[in-house]
Image (cartoon, rainbow, N blue to C red; front, side):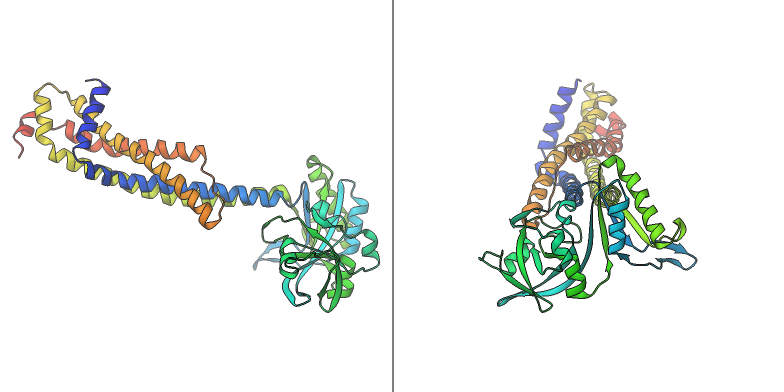
Length: 403
């Protein structure tokens, strides 16, 4: 018998027990839908994190105080001399590969404006910060190098801060109070959205000198942001920064009291983490698909038992062992592929629902669809072999006498 005839017989046989066929496919549908949905969530998370890190700026290096050390007692932060304004100035002056350098320190504080108040992050920095961190203004202007020199009390506020402090009002030119110090709002940042652990929409930027002298009295820096001239110069810039800071801090490679993080390294590490999470979620979903395959095998074995006389009759009429084997394999594969197609559609629908209801970014990739479809076929083939062999191996006379 040819494939078309076998497929027609298989569809008729499955159609004779529609409810059982649907219930048999249910395990595959759920498994495939879970695989597609979980992989789409993982892929969406990966793209979101990638965009967040890239939105920080381009060709960035982050210099921070302290270095992770591993000793006899385990892991811990090495003793660290704090990064200072002088360190930032030295990097800007002595590192040719550094295009722009922006010092940074931050602290949470309560801010008031008239009857409104909010708690937000106050960031002290310089005029290079918006260029280095890829920030744009929608209103007003940024503070200047001169503002930093004269400890001017001016502030740039994020979109969320503007909504909290000045609902339905024009913020530029208004006064805000930070730690009982009156600041003039001179600009509003463009809405950017969550970016890693920080939210650039919920922060206030002030001149670093004002932050240190007038607000919190900090003498050190939390981060020195360095924008490199070009991507190819990142390694060279790292070596230049290390050389400058080691000379200033009188340290060596073994006892550095600072760390330099590469934006590309951060991106790769986060990508590895999201890939691991995606594999974990996908693995759980594949287990449910595997369980669905076991259900297929069980139902096919029941079907072989119920159709024993039919198998004997077909053999008596000339059907070969290969014909019987092929028919039951086609039935198993047909159930899995049909369930897989329905599962893929359901998984895509679930992903869309997650993005709408939960606000998560989900991406249904072609790879996830192809992988789910291929796995459905393999499940049908693998779990259909044993029932098909059992059916094909039945003795014609014994099968005809079966009750």
